Length: 466
Image 1 (spheres, rainbow, N blue to C red):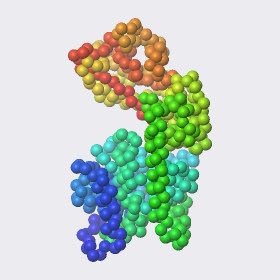
Image 2 (image 1 turned 135 degrees about the vertical axis):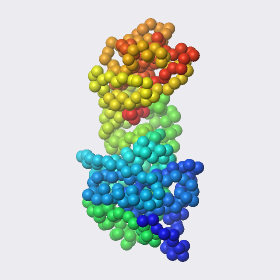
Image 3 (image 1 turned 90 degrees about the vertical axis):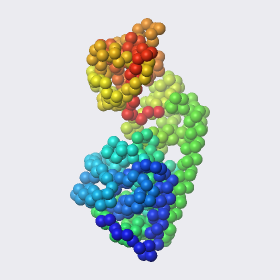
């Protein structure tokens, strides 16, 4: 239910402060035409945030929409989704509901698995019907921050982990919206006061009552005891997280300086790692992983990986797997990437002129641009069926018109393409003729003429690599 207009004289302490804090944070980022999407669960926190944003959107002139994730865990999940849809309809705000299936893996809590699914949805907002979302706005508050900090402390997290949640987090993925948390300075108590004063309605998640979940154990068992002895514990923990965030920022600045000397074409060089102290090398490796949204391995595992990297030479073929990622070395370079899945032998896919062709078995996409005098000749490609095929061995072609036709094997070696990647490249054929290879170029006879509008393919893998 959308509340009626309130009287200012009835505002309880902290009421106006909640709106003011949200306004001050949003003001830093709102520009003409900004689109904010709220992560709406239906609980009191997100319902209050929705009410605040709905008010501020009129005042600050930004577009507002909502996204709801139905995890399907609770028997009441459908009711929550219906509630969120009706609530947004009352406010006149569009909403997208996403249904996910949470699979609990060994060693991963149900909380963590659900959170991972939720953020996967958030990172795909622009593909889920919410076009041009600039910021995803979440309702985490001061008490959530205290819980996060203690949970990270109990996990033995480092400085970055103890930074807990920033009010703004820029995603490393270019397509994911930035995250804003405008209520981080607001207590849970003030949020509940606001909700009652505005006569808001919300849903109760019964799982929040179970102390089997780590956050709930802190909330219901530990924090009441802390509050008796240290009434200001939440604010103190918030200050601690900010101190840790400052320390983390300084470590990032140091890593950026070291990266200028240790990264070549975006890849770590073993020689550069050796020149750093062990601590700075470890800090740089952690930074490289964080920049690519890769969860670092355990501290002991990271130290062992670093030891192997610093003792490797240009001929070493190091290969270390951790989780869904791997580290390899080739000719003195360090490659950090998702574990490679080799395409099935004989894999083939036709191309019918699409601007983008998704190649699932290769783990990426080919994007085609039109540039005059560059790339492939459209007319010559019309001579026979055009398709992508996995490497089979024995292929020859001629990317340099001033040199003879050569074996693809030798060309891949000369291009310094790592051995493990050579059978994962999508090769473009016109009939039986190999006409394009990623990282090498177009066959001489199929190159566009200077005055012709050519087709320039670009291969983009979905595995994170450095």
